[in-house]
Length: 462
Ligand code: ATP
Ligand code: MG
Image 1: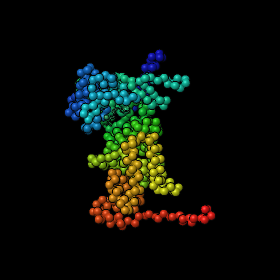
Image 2: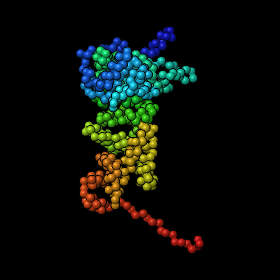
Image 3: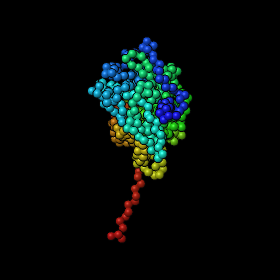
Image 4: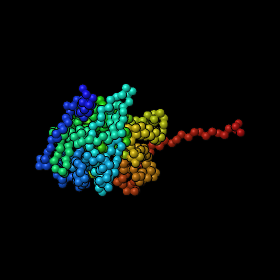
């Protein structure tokens, strides 16, 4: 076989994967004309429409793609609009003065219109199949880089729209719409899967998960969000490959956790994460504690409460959800230290410090959330110390509300707190006089320190 031909076959295999039963590249797209689909310009943001028009006027293609098309076809409201084009990032940058190129691993252009940002992505092409050289070193190229286990470290190889379609994650995310002819272009039978409510990865599942393990998290996220089923071959390798999530940079993982657990359907996502072994690589310190029913209930309840708050339009903060997700580990470590005779407050500090810093290797929690997370933990012990002025000072603390909600959560999960939550609930309702009575009525558990008997001055020492 000629080298050229075998290279070409390898390239196609790369696109389709070794076992290409999942989703086929369809070089002739299924084109759905404007009168046969439900997407209307009215439901697309002006900013996204303007980007498409400007690109077209400059002689480039501009397609709405991804969640924008998917959610519109499902009758929902897209979270954001992503545009794919054949213009390079530099060409896009020149067309929009309010734009900037971001990312290194995966260059894209952000075009800003007031508060809205439109992400413009150049069509991605196929990476050359680089063979392992005898020394095991892979030749690296400026635009494309892959780790030894198949992870894509850089993806700036540009291509055609057909190639772009098969580099996307799931068939339902690879539908293209353009205002050039108002048609929907379907290269991977995404419309059929949308209709049948199926999450199907494009190409060989294992290859695609190795290229980017985050796709496993995206599979469960979309399954939960859309109430779709993960297709059999798409689901099969996840449990086995889930540990490869450990290789993803911790900052990206933090962002993914927020999308998974703070979008309003966290309870369903969490169930699937547990089912597919995807929680453990993100929270390895918490997972073993979940053997205990109390810890398990606390984590599930925190996620349910977050979903409910989002539904009610109440604010939610990553500090609270991370405080809850790590609490079982902090609590266990603190108790262990207390058993080793460390006093309870320093034990809490040490446990918090150890667990939080270890977690940074998995999900890098930015300081603006990490600090309040630790304050929530810290205040759990302080909430029981209410004598003198302490209760009044506590209620003035700007973290009181979060710490109090956290205390209620612990009680909901069955942690013994001796009715402390109810006490604080009442306290907040009472007048200053009644509050003073409540404080006076507390018999704080405050064992008098045993004083060491003073040594009598020993005359012999003088
Ligand atoms: P939503 O914005 O509602 O979370 P989305 O599908 O738009 O969902 P984005 O993260 O905005 O998701 O990505 C936009 C599109 O880019 C996706 O629909 C998909 O086509 C592609 N994409 C995103 N992440 C990946 C990935 N890790 N691998 C392959 N394609 C991806
Ligand atoms: Mg999107």
